[in-house]
Length: 144
Image 1 (cartoon, rainbow, N blue to C red):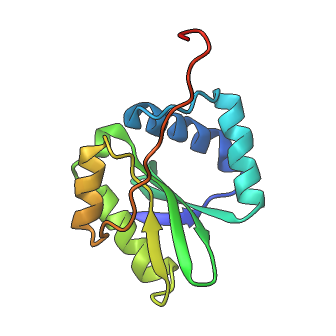
Image 2: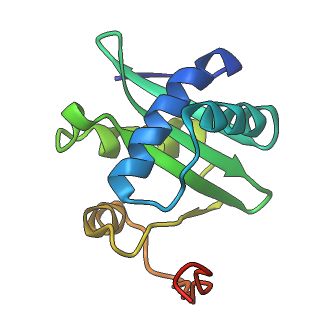
């Protein structure tokens, strides 16, 4: 598996993959493809970096992260659906940790609590529970 830093030219593909991630996670984000593309462009022009992972000329995963002085926050790691459960995510994370990210920084990732497969993956990769965010949703005016 090879990797390369994503550029602004990759934003349409990153938006497409991000949309799949949102669907797979059953996230509440309802952004359109165009909105996701614009957001990705803003992130890459700002404080985020993205890495594309390829195998045999095909993009099989991407990672989007923000590096801070003492921490690297991994916002998104996505493996394309037909390449899951083949070690792609594990290899991608190992590449990030051994070839891209400094070893001196704390690594963090947010995981939706209902995504049990993702929780199991991150724990298997060495991440440990640190914080749980609880919420009360606003009352929907239509239901009130």
